[in-house]
Image (tube, rainbow, N blue to C red; front, side, top):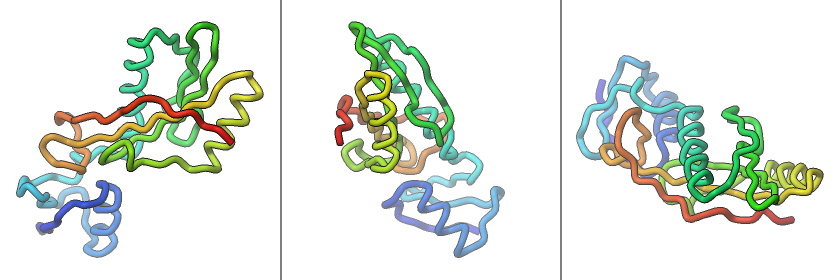
Length: 159
């Protein structure tokens, strides 16, 4: 079964809504906005997208002269990175998703936890939003395809 869909939201909303409505399984296909057939098992999972964002930020901080002190790939663990530069420690919370980085937001409750944890370690809390756009499928996150990455730098988390 093929579904024609204009993708305006992230792949998660698309997958969630179509699975609920049509009962799709992993062997069926979706016809994306650019008319390219896509098997559902080619779509990145939340965990893969999360790891992709952490990898992007890890590469960025190393190029900027930060030392990575600790990191976690666990999607439910914050901060994802603990970094240091000029003897200053930073706790970094990372959000990765489809679209522009300015359209991504963090959970304020989790940000408060990261902020409080950073203060307990005399560190600064930072937020990194990583927006992704798949060159072949737009806002559908597909494995092993080219991506445009939108990251405009760290933002301080303050309460």
